[in-house]
Image 1 (cartoon, rainbow, N blue to C red):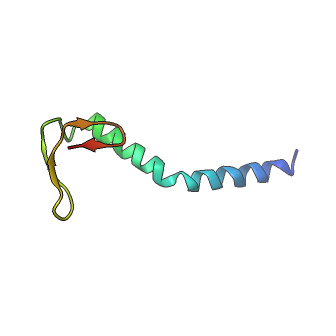
Image 2: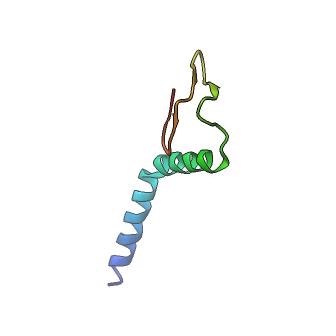
Image 3: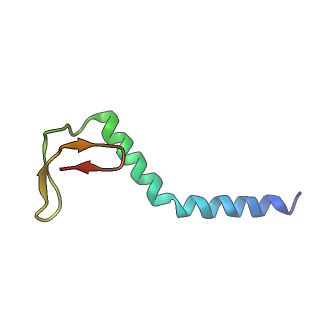
Length: 64
């Protein structure tokens, strides 16, 4: 059992690092849903020339 613990810790670290970007995006989506920064029908300007009116706001996407 003592040799299994470091392997389990290393596996947990590897999985955590692999999911880091995904977990950040989910946290950002939750914040947008909870704080209601945008609502359906809002005009949203993105980077560059992207700008649309939001039709649907979900956990991982906002569709225009």
